Image 1 (cartoon, rainbow, N blue to C red):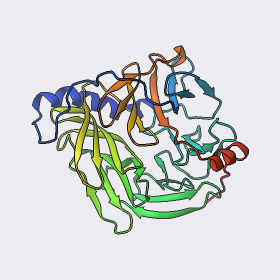
Image 2: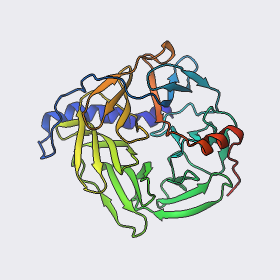
Image 3: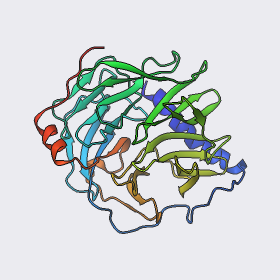
Image 4: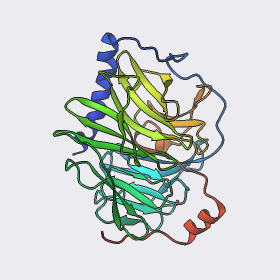
Length: 331
């Protein structure tokens, strides 16, 4: 089962090398360098990092500062399998969601304490903008029905039905910070396509990505400012690209033929953390300068399965998270 979840990542790596030889150039602005140049350290924040432990054949969840210090292993029932999004902070930073051993979504306090499973949830998920609900597809391959479940009660309600043709499946979801837009990737025999749908009108657009028409895209993440970052490979390009919801323009953050699989925005939307070969890097979205984190031995040369940058909790949410955890009721 683990191999099946990793297969799409392998295909993307192959596309990087095969399609780059035959792809055509586009009018998208080229990045200055093939790999990001070094820069000064970013402001200190907190990352949740999931790695695969070969010896135990399971995933392990850590917290670590963005300067590479103060790592801490969390004791949570995280699944041993790989998913496109394994972990995610709530937008208010008060809770951490992850795919649990029952292939459902569990929500814990920031330190991993008091995890509670959301009944009947599914592993392709995203937090809603208000941090009160988890959104997921109700049943894969059955009409693209997207629902949200209240974290406190577990009660579900429909959000939107996405078009899902035979042989296709939705493999990633991401909300805009105002809750008006939902981005998703749909995969199938024709490849992977990145969509953005306006919830109020139902207007669903397949984006003309930087690697259209022959490339693959994966793992989109949305910033508070409406910037959608995604990985892409093909049509002569590969790397991280940013789509602006307001201007509908795409620009490359950097072009690189080194496979990267996970990323997340900083709380202020100015930087991205991503897994590079053998480690983690932080890149400035404006200057395109980056630096590698100095990681402890437990995280060195590991297989990264999930990555999430904690939004800064307010005093009230931090206090609440320290004294209570969400509960989950059946649908």
